[in-house]
Length: 124
Image (cartoon, rainbow, N blue to C red; front, top):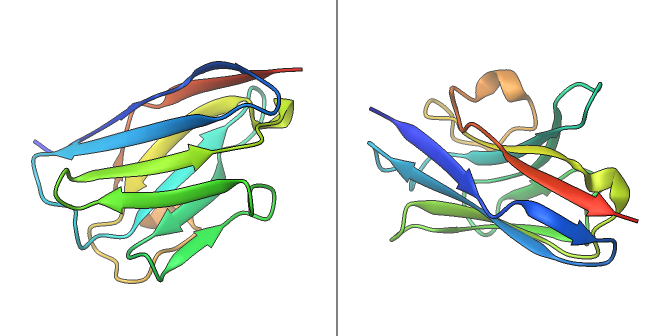
């Protein structure tokens, strides 16, 4: 059974950093585009970052320059390094995999595997 499990969320002060991890099991995701999305209370889920390889990464304008997506193929894990966190980054963060795609996409409907989410709370 394919499973994505996020970890690394928590409570941090504004300006701080967190690193989220997304561990995949049940299948090797090394060639799949992977994405991070987030959903704040009362808002729709939104794109954060996506990648397939180190030279194909995409970021939402709101996190560009502060967040970095990366992957460790040997560990079948994707990371989201979040620096200079702001209160508006508070949300439930999800990782997702697109097992049918080649190019990373910002559109969540293309992702067919999802984790359960990890909460990030940034205090002001």
